[in-house]
Length: 65
Image (tube, rainbow, N blue to C red):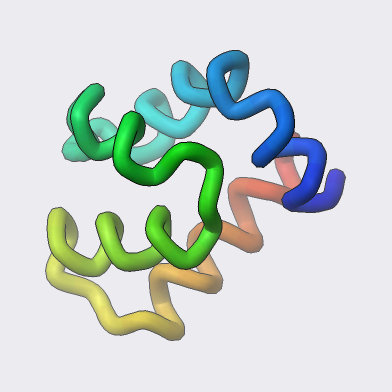
């Protein structure tokens, strides 16, 4: 699946994102609004991980969708 599809259907994917990364709040997901860069930034903030690790986690999650 590509990110454009995630972005276009963000409301539907929010539950999946929150299930994968439980530290993300509803407010975080509202701020992200389907933007991959913002999601990576929020993951960095909440989990204290580096940008490249956040990107790898997003890629792994995307592969499962």
